[in-house]
Image (cartoon, rainbow, N blue to C red; front, side):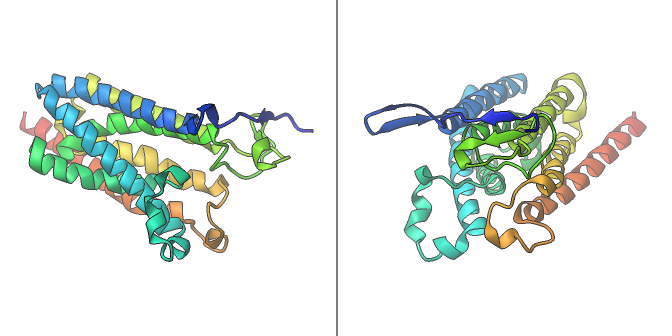
Length: 268
C-alpha cells in the first residue's frame, strides 16, 4: 500500500437530542467571526463607525448563504431543483457553491455600499476581501471535515483515503490545497493593505484577491473530481467556467490599479 493518510473523521462534533453540531457549520461560524473582527479593525483604521462594521456582518451573512445555496441549485443541480423548488430553501440538507457565494457577496455589498457605506464599491472590496479570504480558508477546512470535494487518485505521500466515502485509494486532499491558497491570498492582501500604499490604488488589492482565489481554483479543478455527473464530458468543468469571469476581472483591476500607481508617482 502506498504511503497515505487515512481520513475517517466524523463530520459531527456532538449530538444532543435532535440537535447536531457539525464541524462544517462551526467552521463557517468561526470564519465569519474572524472576518468580522478583521473588517472591524480595518474600518477603525479608516475612521469608520462600529455600526458600519456590524451592519456589514449582517449583509455578508445573508448574501453568502443565499448566494451559495442558489448557486449550487442553479449551477450544479438545476435538473432536480427546477422540479423541487421548495427544497432550494432546505439549506440544512447541504449543497453550497463558492461561486454562488461570491455572487451573493457581490450583490449584498452593492446594496450595503449604496445604502450604508457610500464609499465606493471597489473601495469596499479592496478592504473586505481580506476577511473573505480567511473565511474561505475556514470553509475549506469544513469541507475536509465533511470528507467532500476532494481530488482524483494520487501517489503522493500526502494523499488522503476518505474511508467514510468508501474510498480505498489515496486522493488529492484538494480541500487542504484550497485552504492553503486562501491563507496565502489572505496573507498577501493583508500585507498589501497594512504594510504598503496599495489601498490607495483602487482595485489593486481586490484584483490580487480575485487572481489568488479564482485563478488557483481554475488550475486546481484539473485534479478535482467532478461534482456532478453532467461535468464528465466537459472540457472545462462548471467550477472552471464560473472562475473565468472573475479571473478576467481580476486581471483588469490589477492593470488599472498599477496604472493609477504609476500615474500618481509620475505626478509626484
